[in-house]
Image 1 (cartoon, protein in one colour):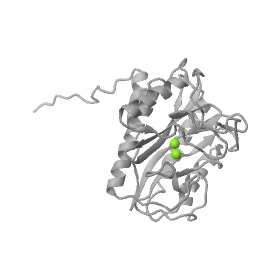
Image 2: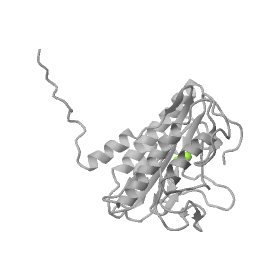
Image 3: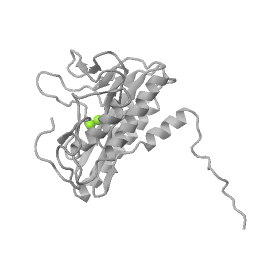
Image 4: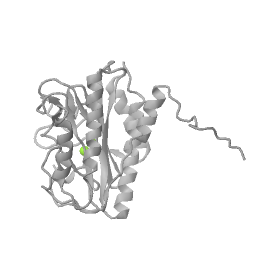
Length: 284
Ligand code: MG
Ligand code: MG
Protein backbone atom coordinates (compact mmCIF):
# COMPACT_ATOMS: atom_id res chain seq x y z
CA UNK A 1 0.00 0.00 0.00
CA UNK A 2 2.69 2.52 0.90
CA UNK A 3 4.84 2.16 -2.19
CA UNK A 4 6.97 4.70 -4.03
CA UNK A 5 9.45 7.18 -2.71
CA UNK A 6 9.37 9.07 0.56
CA UNK A 7 8.01 12.61 0.13
CA UNK A 8 9.35 15.36 2.37
CA UNK A 9 6.93 18.25 2.89
CA UNK A 10 7.55 22.01 2.68
CA UNK A 11 5.71 24.65 4.70
CA UNK A 12 2.91 24.98 2.13
CA UNK A 13 2.41 21.22 2.16
CA UNK A 14 2.28 21.17 5.94
CA UNK A 15 -0.30 23.97 5.92
CA UNK A 16 -2.46 21.95 3.52
CA UNK A 17 -2.11 18.81 5.64
CA UNK A 18 -3.12 20.77 8.74
CA UNK A 19 -6.28 21.96 6.98
CA UNK A 20 -7.22 18.41 6.04
CA UNK A 21 -6.48 17.28 9.61
CA UNK A 22 -8.73 20.04 10.97
CA UNK A 23 -11.63 18.66 8.93
CA UNK A 24 -10.91 15.16 10.28
CA UNK A 25 -11.01 16.63 13.79
CA UNK A 26 -14.42 18.20 13.19
CA UNK A 27 -15.77 15.02 11.62
CA UNK A 28 -14.58 12.92 14.56
CA UNK A 29 -16.08 15.45 16.99
CA UNK A 30 -19.43 15.12 15.19
CA UNK A 31 -19.17 11.35 15.59
CA UNK A 32 -18.17 11.74 19.26
CA UNK A 33 -21.41 13.57 20.01
CA UNK A 34 -23.33 10.47 18.88
CA UNK A 35 -21.37 7.89 20.86
CA UNK A 36 -23.91 6.61 23.34
CA UNK A 37 -25.93 3.43 23.84
CA UNK A 38 -28.57 2.90 21.15
CA UNK A 39 -26.91 4.82 18.30
CA UNK A 40 -26.47 2.81 15.09
CA UNK A 41 -22.88 3.22 13.97
CA UNK A 42 -24.12 4.27 10.52
CA UNK A 43 -25.32 7.52 12.11
CA UNK A 44 -21.77 8.39 13.14
CA UNK A 45 -20.71 7.84 9.56
CA UNK A 46 -23.46 10.05 8.15
CA UNK A 47 -22.66 12.86 10.58
CA UNK A 48 -18.96 12.73 9.77
CA UNK A 49 -19.53 12.63 6.03
CA UNK A 50 -21.79 15.70 6.22
CA UNK A 51 -19.05 17.64 8.03
CA UNK A 52 -16.45 16.57 5.49
CA UNK A 53 -18.55 17.51 2.46
CA UNK A 54 -19.68 20.83 4.00
CA UNK A 55 -15.99 21.69 4.39
CA UNK A 56 -15.38 21.01 0.70
CA UNK A 57 -13.50 17.80 1.45
CA UNK A 58 -13.85 14.22 0.28
CA UNK A 59 -14.07 11.21 2.59
CA UNK A 60 -10.79 9.51 1.72
CA UNK A 61 -11.84 6.06 2.93
CA UNK A 62 -15.10 5.91 0.96
CA UNK A 63 -14.50 3.88 -2.16
CA UNK A 64 -10.91 3.13 -1.11
CA UNK A 65 -9.58 0.09 -2.92
CA UNK A 66 -7.29 -2.38 -1.21
CA UNK A 67 -6.65 -4.22 -4.46
CA UNK A 68 -7.48 -7.72 -5.58
CA UNK A 69 -11.11 -8.80 -5.44
CA UNK A 70 -11.91 -6.90 -2.25
CA UNK A 71 -14.80 -4.47 -2.84
CA UNK A 72 -14.16 -0.77 -2.16
CA UNK A 73 -14.61 0.44 1.42
CA UNK A 74 -18.25 1.52 1.91
CA UNK A 75 -17.99 4.17 4.63
CA UNK A 76 -16.51 7.57 5.39
CA UNK A 77 -15.40 6.27 8.78
CA UNK A 78 -13.94 2.97 9.86
CA UNK A 79 -15.98 2.05 12.94
CA UNK A 80 -14.52 -0.85 14.86
CA UNK A 81 -16.42 -2.13 17.89
CA UNK A 82 -14.92 -4.31 20.64
CA UNK A 83 -13.01 -7.22 19.04
CA UNK A 84 -12.86 -5.43 15.68
CA UNK A 85 -9.38 -3.94 15.48
CA UNK A 86 -9.75 -1.67 12.44
CA UNK A 87 -11.63 -1.29 9.13
CA UNK A 88 -15.07 -2.05 10.58
CA UNK A 89 -18.01 -1.05 8.37
CA UNK A 90 -20.52 1.53 9.59
CA UNK A 91 -23.74 -0.45 10.05
CA UNK A 92 -27.13 -0.77 11.70
CA UNK A 93 -25.40 -2.14 14.83
CA UNK A 94 -26.54 -0.09 17.82
CA UNK A 95 -23.81 0.81 20.30
CA UNK A 96 -24.21 -0.79 23.72
CA UNK A 97 -23.21 0.27 27.20
CA UNK A 98 -19.71 -1.10 27.82
CA UNK A 99 -18.61 -1.21 24.17
CA UNK A 100 -15.35 0.31 23.03
CA UNK A 101 -15.54 1.81 19.57
CA UNK A 102 -12.55 2.88 17.50
CA UNK A 103 -13.40 5.54 14.93
CA UNK A 104 -10.92 6.32 12.15
CA UNK A 105 -11.44 9.12 9.64
CA UNK A 106 -9.68 10.13 6.43
CA UNK A 107 -10.20 13.35 4.48
CA UNK A 108 -8.81 14.69 1.24
CA UNK A 109 -8.96 18.47 0.99
CA UNK A 110 -7.30 20.50 -1.74
CA UNK A 111 -4.95 17.68 -2.65
CA UNK A 112 -3.84 16.94 0.92
CA UNK A 113 -4.83 14.13 3.25
CA UNK A 114 -5.72 13.93 6.91
CA UNK A 115 -6.07 10.58 8.72
CA UNK A 116 -6.43 9.97 12.43
CA UNK A 117 -8.40 7.97 14.93
CA UNK A 118 -9.76 7.84 18.48
CA UNK A 119 -11.26 5.06 20.56
CA UNK A 120 -14.39 5.90 22.55
CA UNK A 121 -15.93 4.23 25.57
CA UNK A 122 -19.70 3.76 25.26
CA UNK A 123 -21.27 4.70 28.59
CA UNK A 124 -19.59 2.97 31.51
CA UNK A 125 -16.93 0.47 30.46
CA UNK A 126 -15.07 -2.11 32.50
CA UNK A 127 -11.87 -1.18 34.32
CA UNK A 128 -10.04 -3.63 32.02
CA UNK A 129 -11.37 -1.93 28.89
CA UNK A 130 -10.49 1.50 30.26
CA UNK A 131 -6.95 0.34 30.95
CA UNK A 132 -6.66 -0.93 27.36
CA UNK A 133 -7.75 2.49 26.06
CA UNK A 134 -5.44 4.37 28.41
CA UNK A 135 -2.49 2.13 27.54
CA UNK A 136 -3.01 2.41 23.78
CA UNK A 137 -3.31 6.15 23.95
CA UNK A 138 -0.24 6.49 26.14
CA UNK A 139 1.65 4.21 23.74
CA UNK A 140 0.80 6.56 20.89
CA UNK A 141 2.53 9.41 22.71
CA UNK A 142 5.46 7.16 23.60
CA UNK A 143 5.85 6.55 19.87
CA UNK A 144 5.49 10.22 18.97
CA UNK A 145 8.24 11.07 21.42
CA UNK A 146 10.64 9.04 19.30
CA UNK A 147 9.73 10.75 16.02
CA UNK A 148 12.31 13.53 15.96
CA UNK A 149 14.68 14.05 13.04
CA UNK A 150 17.63 11.67 13.10
CA UNK A 151 15.77 8.86 14.88
CA UNK A 152 14.68 5.72 13.05
CA UNK A 153 11.34 4.09 12.34
CA UNK A 154 12.33 1.21 14.63
CA UNK A 155 12.63 3.62 17.55
CA UNK A 156 8.92 4.41 17.25
CA UNK A 157 7.91 0.76 17.03
CA UNK A 158 10.17 -0.24 19.89
CA UNK A 159 8.68 2.42 22.16
CA UNK A 160 5.10 1.36 21.42
CA UNK A 161 5.79 -2.36 21.61
CA UNK A 162 7.76 -2.27 24.84
CA UNK A 163 5.20 0.00 26.52
CA UNK A 164 2.25 -2.26 25.63
CA UNK A 165 3.83 -5.68 25.94
CA UNK A 166 5.26 -4.65 29.29
CA UNK A 167 1.65 -4.20 30.44
CA UNK A 168 0.50 -7.54 29.08
CA UNK A 169 -1.17 -6.36 25.89
CA UNK A 170 -0.86 -7.71 22.35
CA UNK A 171 0.57 -5.48 19.61
CA UNK A 172 -0.98 -5.98 16.17
CA UNK A 173 1.81 -6.75 13.72
CA UNK A 174 -0.20 -7.16 10.52
CA UNK A 175 -1.19 -3.49 10.25
CA UNK A 176 1.07 -0.46 10.42
CA UNK A 177 1.26 3.32 10.46
CA UNK A 178 2.50 5.14 7.36
CA UNK A 179 3.59 8.32 5.69
CA UNK A 180 0.75 10.68 4.84
CA UNK A 181 0.06 13.99 3.12
CA UNK A 182 -0.12 13.99 -0.65
CA UNK A 183 -1.55 10.51 -0.57
CA UNK A 184 -3.49 8.70 2.14
CA UNK A 185 -0.77 6.09 2.46
CA UNK A 186 2.80 7.04 1.64
CA UNK A 187 6.03 5.31 2.54
CA UNK A 188 7.56 4.57 4.94
CA UNK A 189 5.59 1.96 6.84
CA UNK A 190 5.59 2.67 10.57
CA UNK A 191 5.13 -0.63 12.44
CA UNK A 192 4.06 -0.67 16.07
CA UNK A 193 6.94 -2.92 16.93
CA UNK A 194 10.60 -2.75 16.16
CA UNK A 195 14.14 -2.47 17.33
CA UNK A 196 15.90 0.65 18.46
CA UNK A 197 18.20 2.24 15.90
CA UNK A 198 16.84 0.11 13.05
CA UNK A 199 14.82 1.08 9.98
CA UNK A 200 14.44 4.18 7.82
CA UNK A 201 15.97 7.35 9.21
CA UNK A 202 13.45 10.08 10.02
CA UNK A 203 14.18 13.31 8.17
CA UNK A 204 12.85 16.78 8.78
CA UNK A 205 9.71 17.35 6.69
CA UNK A 206 8.49 13.76 6.87
CA UNK A 207 4.82 13.51 7.82
CA UNK A 208 3.68 10.29 9.46
CA UNK A 209 0.60 8.61 10.86
CA UNK A 210 1.56 6.85 14.07
CA UNK A 211 -1.23 4.48 15.03
CA UNK A 212 -0.90 1.77 17.66
CA UNK A 213 -3.52 -1.00 17.36
CA UNK A 214 -3.40 -2.81 20.68
CA UNK A 215 -5.34 -5.88 21.78
CA UNK A 216 -6.48 -7.02 25.20
CA UNK A 217 -5.07 -10.48 24.49
CA UNK A 218 -3.03 -11.81 21.59
CA UNK A 219 -1.77 -9.47 18.88
CA UNK A 220 -2.89 -11.99 16.25
CA UNK A 221 -5.77 -10.97 14.00
CA UNK A 222 -8.16 -12.46 11.45
CA UNK A 223 -10.01 -10.85 8.54
CA UNK A 224 -13.74 -11.42 7.91
CA UNK A 225 -15.08 -12.67 4.58
CA UNK A 226 -15.89 -9.06 3.62
CA UNK A 227 -12.15 -8.63 3.04
CA UNK A 228 -11.92 -5.65 5.41
CA UNK A 229 -13.05 -6.25 8.97
CA UNK A 230 -9.97 -7.08 11.07
CA UNK A 231 -10.68 -8.87 14.37
CA UNK A 232 -8.63 -10.07 17.28
CA UNK A 233 -7.95 -13.78 16.89
CA UNK A 234 -9.05 -14.51 20.47
CA UNK A 235 -12.11 -12.23 20.62
CA UNK A 236 -10.53 -9.85 23.15
CA UNK A 237 -11.24 -6.13 22.68
CA UNK A 238 -8.89 -3.85 20.77
CA UNK A 239 -8.09 -0.14 20.78
CA UNK A 240 -6.68 2.23 18.16
CA UNK A 241 -5.43 5.79 18.49
CA UNK A 242 -3.76 7.64 15.63
CA UNK A 243 -2.09 11.02 15.28
CA UNK A 244 -0.41 12.75 12.35
CA UNK A 245 3.04 14.13 13.08
CA UNK A 246 5.65 16.26 11.35
CA UNK A 247 9.24 15.19 11.91
CA UNK A 248 11.32 18.15 13.04
CA UNK A 249 14.69 18.72 14.57
CA UNK A 250 14.37 18.29 18.30
CA UNK A 251 11.13 16.33 18.11
CA UNK A 252 7.89 15.62 16.33
CA UNK A 253 5.12 18.16 16.05
CA UNK A 254 1.59 16.77 16.22
CA UNK A 255 -0.48 18.07 13.28
CA UNK A 256 -3.77 16.48 14.34
CA UNK A 257 -5.72 17.32 17.49
CA UNK A 258 -8.15 15.63 19.85
CA UNK A 259 -9.33 18.96 21.34
CA UNK A 260 -12.73 19.14 19.63
CA UNK A 261 -13.34 15.44 20.19
CA UNK A 262 -12.67 15.75 23.89
CA UNK A 263 -14.78 18.89 24.17
CA UNK A 264 -17.65 16.95 22.60
CA UNK A 265 -17.13 14.11 25.07
CA UNK A 266 -16.99 16.49 28.03
CA UNK A 267 -20.19 18.21 26.88
CA UNK A 268 -21.89 14.83 26.56
CA UNK A 269 -20.86 14.08 30.15
CA UNK A 270 -22.38 17.38 31.23
CA UNK A 271 -19.12 18.98 32.24
CA UNK A 272 -18.78 22.70 31.87
CA UNK A 273 -15.71 23.77 29.95
CA UNK A 274 -16.61 27.43 29.96
CA UNK A 275 -16.38 28.05 33.68
CA UNK A 276 -13.15 29.87 34.53
CA UNK A 277 -10.93 28.01 36.96
CA UNK A 278 -10.13 31.16 38.94
CA UNK A 279 -12.14 34.30 39.70
CA UNK A 280 -11.86 36.86 36.94
CA UNK A 281 -11.99 39.95 39.13
CA UNK A 282 -8.83 41.09 40.83
CA UNK A 283 -8.21 43.66 43.51
CA UNK A 284 -5.83 46.60 43.22
MG1 MG B 1 -6.50 6.12 10.16
MG1 MG C 1 -3.62 5.72 9.10
